[in-house]
Image 1 (cartoon, rainbow, N blue to C red):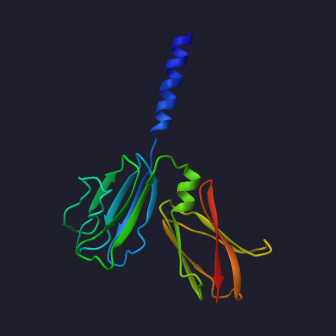
Image 2: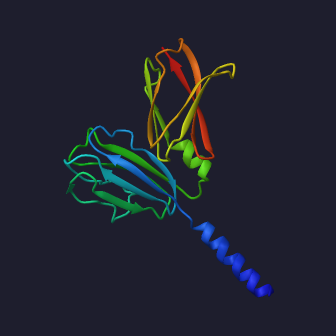
Image 3: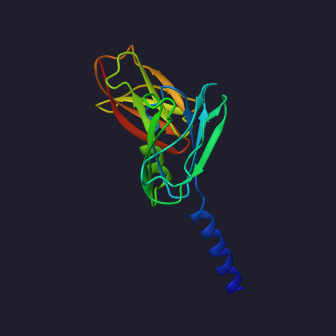
Length: 192
C-alpha cells in the first residue's frame, strides 16, 4: 500500500509540475506591444487578426532554430510555439517590421500570479478619456481606487482587452485593479 501511495503522489506531482499555460497574441499591423513573459514549457499562439500576409520570425541569437512561422495569409491562422529553455527573444513580422514586434521573456519558473501581473499592459498613461487594458489572461472585472483607497468605480470586463472610460474622473493618480478569476494585479494610472 505504501508503494502505491508513493507512486500516486509521484504521478500527481509530476502532472502538476508540467501543467503549463498557453497564451494568445492577436497578430496584426499595429501590434507593437506583443511582449510576453512566460515560463519554460509554456506555449504562445499568434493568431492572425486580418487577411494580410504575416509571419513570426526572429534573428535573435537566443531564438530556437525552428522558431519561424513562415509567411502565411488568412485571418484566424494560428502559429504556435512551446518554449523549452530560458531566453529573451526579440521577434517581429518581417513583412511589417515597424508595426508588428515584441519580446518574449522565458524564465525557469513563474507562478500564475506573476504571469498575470507581468503580462498586463495598459495605455495610454497618462490617460485623458479611455484606458485600454490588455492581458494574456481573460479579464473579468476591474476596480478603480483613489490614492486614499476609496473605490471610485468598478465594472465588468470580458476577453483579453477591455476599455475603461475615465473621462468623468478628476485629474490625479488612480490605482486600477484588473481581475481574472482569482487573480488580480494593481497598477497606477495618471488621469489628465
